[in-house]
Image (cartoon, rainbow, N blue to C red; front, side, top):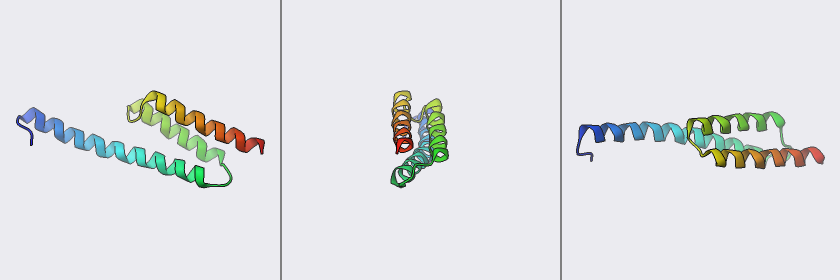
Length: 84
């Protein structure tokens, strides 16, 4: 329990932000799982996931370097699927 009004407001803001961020992260993870589990890699799905990763990094939901790493892994997977 917060001791001051400002601490109470801060706690409420944190709850709102964390629930919003959790939705974004879970949507990204679900898209990633869908791409990894499919036998054929769809370029449109990969593009949509990269876009959502960029948006999450821009908003500070995930770290910038984590976004770069995720996109590199996706592009590597897409390139390997194109060679086959």
